[in-house]
Length: 259
Image 1 (cartoon, one colour):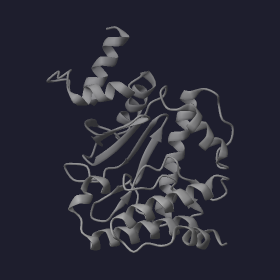
Image 2 (tube, helix red, strand yellow; image 1 turned 45 degrees about the vertical axis):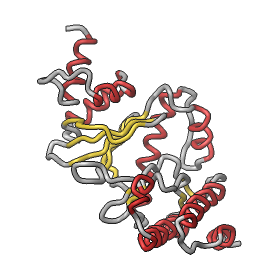
Image 3 (cartoon, one colour; image 1 turned 90 degrees about the vertical axis):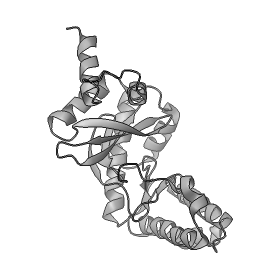
């Protein structure tokens, strides 16, 4: 058996395609977009340790990563985020990492930068949860793969943006309070900022869940104030358009930074 045959067989097993050979499935196509030898070896590592039994569906696709649904050895649902190791925007990742005081030496190899980026998102999730901000529970990370709690039942929980037409003003008021309190709690208690908070990164579930923590950073980061302002602006502008009585942006910002 050639190496290519071995890789193909292992992909089929991870994707649950060994029996039916549905090579033209959407799952197979999307997985192939982020597939390389490192990714396969990383998934095999998780598979051997029972962290990942099978990848069973696509949750989302993006320029930098694809997110899949999977299950562990005990049948628990998971979200598996796989970063692209060669198409992620180098300059953006570098700028965020070099400004983060938690990150030390930065390699010039893009693949290794992505590994640091993945580890950083795992740590951000841990920190957010520590300070009582609802986010997916991180399970494990290695190289360019991050395994997290799956939010949803049979289908992934929808984003706020996807269901906004079904909501009423009281719903938006409640969600606004959730978002603003999350920003405040992160900043005041966790010395942290999400950095990309918007209607696209809030899942509507039993309670709202904030996702996509790759850009989050600590207050000591020289970029933190601009990221805080951006989060506040996104949330205040969005909910203001929905008829919610919102805070004044500049006043809220000054309140949080102590000016």
